[in-house]
View 1 (cartoon, rainbow, N blue to C red):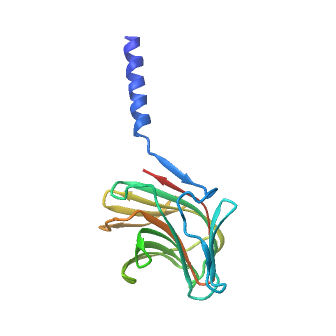
View 2: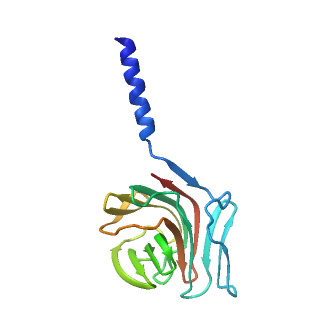
View 3: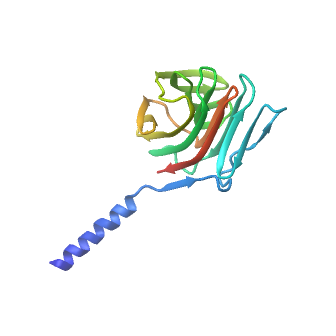
Length: 198
């Protein structure tokens, strides 16, 4: 009887271990996922991986900078993406965001932050074709350290900041594994690491 119980416990443990989600961490110690980097134009902005951090900095008003990689996940299945970030300063005209379902610069989804709200935006052929907005009062507006989490669960997408759900949306099909970040108008975003879980 004891031997049988031990075998059952070992089988349960093996099943639990095999069912555990696979987590891949990009800590930017090397550019393993080919994040696009560079200096943009005549001091317009920079995208650089320095000392294990991804830095995106736009240096002029109304300038938007984007960087992306192709995430090691299958977007047709449930997943979780968590980014550990530092935002320089939140203002109405200084925005940062998480890009996903990224096909190219004109076709993607994103969660966008400013001083007053978090918005879900959908772009097709360089045009905004849909959005949701959630007003929010931030405790702090300078040098914010945050954890952003995007969760796909069946046909729903949830976006969380520091573990608190901000927006939940439905009926937004995903087709592309491109994931990234952006800044607009004299804004800096530092990403310390990003985790892909499936």
